[in-house]
Length: 121
Image (cartoon, rainbow, N blue to C red; front, side):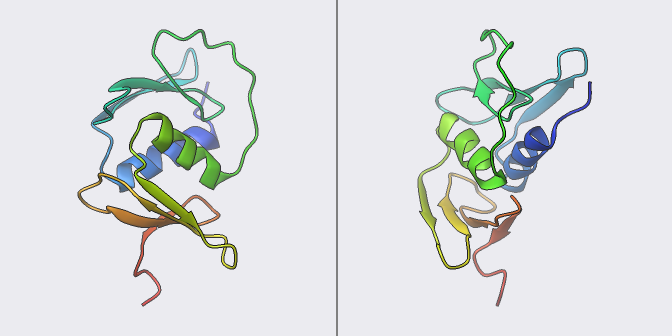
């Protein structure tokens, strides 16, 4: 089994924010195991749907479709790494604050890419 786009979006967001300590992908189950500085889930699974779950959760959950920003926000929220968020209705951008040392305030573009808040200057 190969990783899904939803899983890649979350891994990319955590890596960009420097909030991913360790990771491993299990090709047999399609589950990505991660370790983060999360106070709630230090070790967690990223399911193929993009949902974050405790390691001992049964994994026969249905695949759900959702947009890139929602996947990233849900992952950060579940890991208790999202401190604030603000959506800009005109641009569709989502501004976030996290405990990231490299990018504490960032923009999640509708595509799921994370960029610094000054990216257009």
